[in-house]
Picture 1 (tube, rainbow, N blue to C red):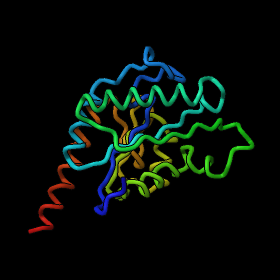
Picture 2: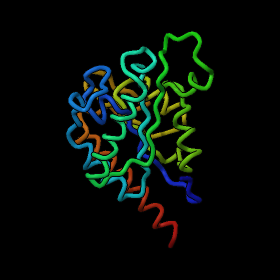
Picture 3: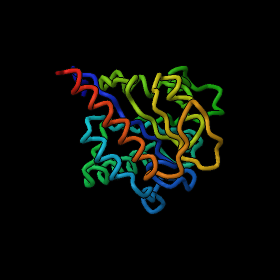
Picture 4: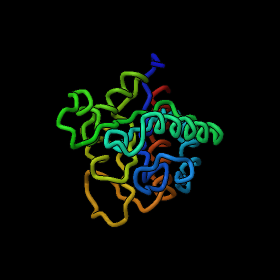
Length: 195
């Protein structure tokens, strides 16, 4: 539901950020939540951020699992977040096969590294992209966030070389500490602006 007040979001990739990336995860039995994800998301919700998942799920387009299987897993995932006081505001997915030459322009604009899902979230929730945060585990996540104007980008991958375009972190615990500093500074600036 779109709010009249614009507020930032914490954008999360799914596989490799929310859950361990076992490759084309579509069943609860293979969905292992990453350590620290619920604590981080519960904290950021209290700090006044939307929680938005932006995920490429090409397994649907490739015929590896169905849209219904993806949807059932997503509903179950959302319940787990609710139970941990970190209700997701929106889950967006591109299900296209990246090799599909007949994919629609809309679907091509949604699949990361294109920024379409970020702009869709902005429209639906009135997200303040300029103060938002992205956590991803691939360079396409970082590129999509950059293309959407999201300035705070964290890449979960200790093997990737450092970059001035994003912060590389080894795990969500490390990432959470850095995000808390960002959010606390933002909230302090807002409070100081009201005085």
